[in-house]
Amino acid sequence: MSTAPTLVVIGGGPRGTGVIERIAANAPELYGDLPLDIHLVDPYPAGGGRIWRPDQSPLLWMNSMAEDVTMFTDETVELAGPVVEGPALHAWAEDVRAGRVTPDAEPAVLAEIRGLTGQDFPSRRLQSAYLRWTYERALAALPPSITVHEHRTTALSVTGPRGSRQRVRLKDRTEPLLADLVVLTVGHLDAEQEPEQAELSDFAARHGLIHLPPDFTADTDLAALPAGEPVIVRGFGLAFIDLMVLLTEGRGGRHEDGVYVPSGREPVLYVGSRRGVPYHSKIGYTWTGERPLPRYLTPEWADELLSRPGPLDFRREVWPLVAKELGHAHYHRLFTAHPGRTTLDPEVFDAKYAAADPGSPELADLVAGAVPDPADRLDLDALDRPLDGVTYESGEALQEGLRDYITADLTRRHDPDHSTDLAVFLGLLSVYAQLIRLGDIGNWWHGFFSYLASGPPGPRLEQLLALSRAGVVRFLGGSVAVEADEERGVFRASAATVPGEHIEARALVEARLPDPSLRHTASPLLRTLYEGGAAVTDTGLLSVDPGDSRIVDREGRPHPRRFALGPFTTARNSGAFTRPRTGGPAFRQNDAAARAALSFLRDLSCHGRLAS
Image 1 (cartoon, rainbow, N blue to C red):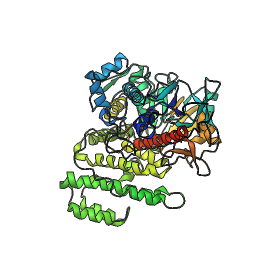
Image 2 (cartoon, one colour):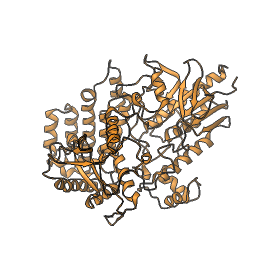
Image 3 (cartoon, rainbow, N blue to C red):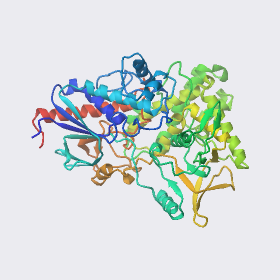
Image 4 (cartoon, rainbow, N blue to C red):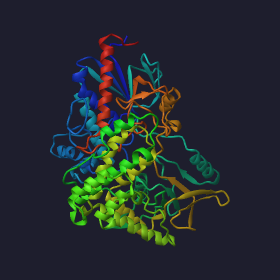
């Protein structure tokens, strides 16, 4: 008979670290000095986990500024447990420089810390050191009666009846771990190849070609891509930026004063996507003034939607008000910070805007009359698909056109005269905080959000421009189609943006992460859960209780002993990390799960119901 309850946390990255931090914060109130064994399972170092592990290229950056990354709660977070403040990444670096903190980091990372400012985009190796320190601080905050055991291996399955201990099978251990509770925080998932990807891989194998399916770029073997030869790249988001860096600077090239000096070992990257343009640059200035959010997408609005029977239709029931909320953020900022570009009293405009139906002609007429310059109006459709209906007469004309587009985006995103863009960004964060309560709302919204709000640092797009001018990157355009030419034995890519032109290559790279679907996951752990009756949505997300993140079965019952948090669940969040003082929905989820777990384990311990 065990003398202490056992909690198994599967996944030692930022989410697992966050759960342990919340256990430490809530234990004095909910658990006292009762004993508890926590087993943390991850083949990678705890704190950073796989994605933020320390042994990756120093060329790979975070896509957030140091001042926009925190692992700690503040008073803006709605949570039942205590707020335990801690430093954001840039403040932690200041503590390191002042000698108040001594991180476990390599000399190269310590050197980077010494030069870090709040507006810098740190390397992922530096973020790994911050996460490791956060993890160690969480361990130190645990009561003496709680012990953490690390297992540097992979969890293969979780089985067991609802009413007793769960059995967690590990890769390198004959006997399973027995757990009173299990929390899954496994982060991004590997996946089985989709049918199209499997067909492309089979085609590549038959013809001696190279096909790299969706994957985390740092884990992809890029050595097979030959120097000087064309490579078709499908995907223009953050995975492409990492690919671009590793195949240029990573192969010995360098950037000097806006010019790329090649090493001669680079392939030629022909990149395209559905949109045909890169994600929008990070905004390069800070916010001043009030944040009047949310106006329409309030908690009460979400409560009303959730009370309706049946599934939600995102485009019909949700998107119109999302668009109105983003418009409110945009126009409130325009009238407040740039009143010379408006022609109506702001209070009059606000009242009429509030009264108009989303997407109505009345709303369009109001905006047209009050905002004379079309460039000052918010057009979400044009933002989403800027190349729709646009064609170029040649590939060379497209290269010039896309360089002009990227240059204009960089200029605008670093110009406070366009602070309406930052207002929309903050509006997107506010919207996301309510939309995650609705569960699985489809993939379109998450892609749209990432494109507008989670793009690369400005310097990365400057590097992209330099690589384009050097001929190392070539733009394909939008609505890209890739074909496998059996007769010629090559991949062929074409795009609607340049009708009649195509590129042939012996290598194809899918520059994106695998979809987070449990139906096609390559994880034996999650496949076992799916096959064992866990509920999944139409897009393959694991269904969890929105209140405390317990895994829900196909009968709609939350499992009393299994929790899950992360991008593979219906409670997925807007990004890997939280900006300080923005409410942090992930913190609220971590806190609720930790409190539910502690309460359950306390009752087991106090009533002597521990199973053998």
